[in-house]
Length: 385
Length: 215
Image (tube, rainbow over all chains, first blue to last red; front, top):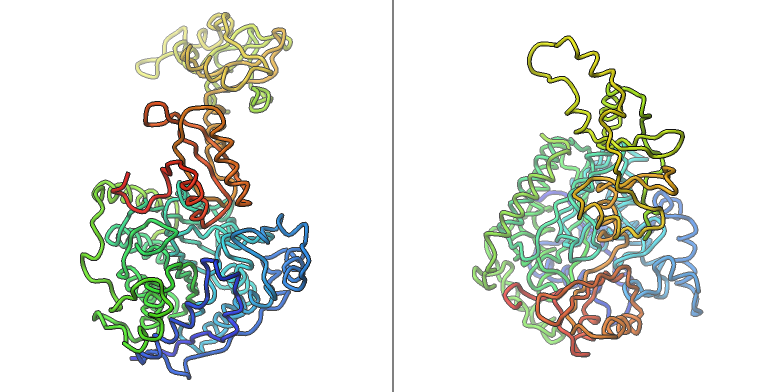
């Protein structure tokens, strides 16, 4: 049965654009929407245009001075000397025209999504332009200028006094969100990611558990490189329900980076499309069980925009809109025809990856036992139910 | 890095005439393993938690008549007087070496017998954790190079040209003869073009790598 779920979207989302050579490319939003439309999973009536976050809303998390610098950078051709000390104008976060407006819109999308869910107007809401989890109070980092997840959580705390469970399944650690609420016992941040021993940003160790009153309310599950589906899902399906039932949230906010796939050029977790089928399923079940379905989903990383992102986020939308996909459906020919000519790689013919597409990892058993230890340790000091 | 940079200055001590009972209490209360014995600011000896326990009555069996006497004995009767010490200007690695070679757990830090601080194996471990830790969002790049002059500078030049900030560097012995491994943490989420530049310059990348089987 179809559920009333909002799909936050406007073409203006594509103005969050660094440059042609940059791996973060919001063209993936349009590709995802096209795919959903062609598969008859998305109607015009599902789409809600985002609003722009106000300066006061951004300032719930970000320093005013930083907001001013971001505005200035986006409105001048001149080089701003102090930009680099705010992480702006770097290889990761180059300056682009109207960068404040573009990012404030992505943040506003997540804020509006939160309002729609909290008012009860919509059961769930999805803002794929959000999930910018590396943004810090006063510093851009890892392709993120403002942190829509942090701002939305601070907003949920302030306006609704809600206990927020944040679930981050991006391959990179959700550092910006973790540090923003590190001492807050009303926000539990739970991040599953590739170990920071090798991968950016380097944090997300099991021992980062929160501080002061918030001790135990930051949970990290750093997984080994080459973890693959089975071990990844073992971690997710063991840790998430335990932590969620222990914490008893009023609302769940998820970050759905889809850069853990084997095809992703930046990471090494070697997962397949299967985890993107399972991630939203469990998150939604827990939202129904614990907080009357209140679930806000954001996007995040995902750097194979041709073969991975549109499929992964279609699975996310299908699940959250009550159109769960269990069969391995074909990708419509019209969609492949539309994008194959632009794509440097052969587009995938089906929504899920066929069994045996990727060669097995030689050290699989060893990696699985290492991850099992990680799961046990991650659960040591957090709420458990 | 010098001993004075990482030593503890607020040292818990006892005086030679104070009792074993007091020493025992201090060891428990502050959860420490070493008590320098100090007379008018000068170091005269040291006792460890094990010295104190050796001197204490057993917890098994009946109380004995001289238990009180034992606990009231001054620590000067059990302290060690030949103390291995450090100077505030010693290098941390020298202090680490002294702990390791002598199989001991702490070094009182003295200048002309006057106690200035203490450095323990815990402080050394903490320093190692800090040195190898991650303090900025960054990626790990590991390069194998020949063990000869100038190669660290050559690889570092590649980061400079790419305008990429390096937040830490470790030079480690290589797994292969005549090689060294350079481990960098660099401030970027996307190290791909750095990796290709390093490979173009003819060095072998140990990490990141595409798949597990290749190396």
